[in-house]
Amino acid sequence: MTDNYKSLENEAHAIHITEEEVHKFYVGESMFKLGYLIEGVKCKLIDISRSDLVKENSHLSRKKWINEGVDVEVLKVGSLGWQQGKLRLKISVEFCPNDELN
Image (cartoon, rainbow, N blue to C red; front, side):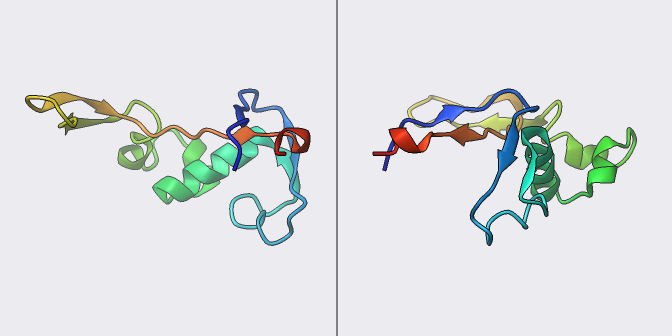
């Protein structure tokens, strides 16, 4: 296993998935932009359609998980008490070129 993966930040990057059984779940195509993959993962994660993701007043309580965050309390290991704040889910996509896998 390698730890040479680097985060892909630009959602305009083009991706071509060559492993046939993998790509259908989130995007339905083998070639797409990174932003399309991230959008698909977000939709699966919060269980809404792509069209509902862009609608302003649709599924607001679900969208909070990926937008402004939800109110929570966290008890961190080793801390003395609960800490109030917001929790937000973020999708990160990483890439490692084949020449760095070995």
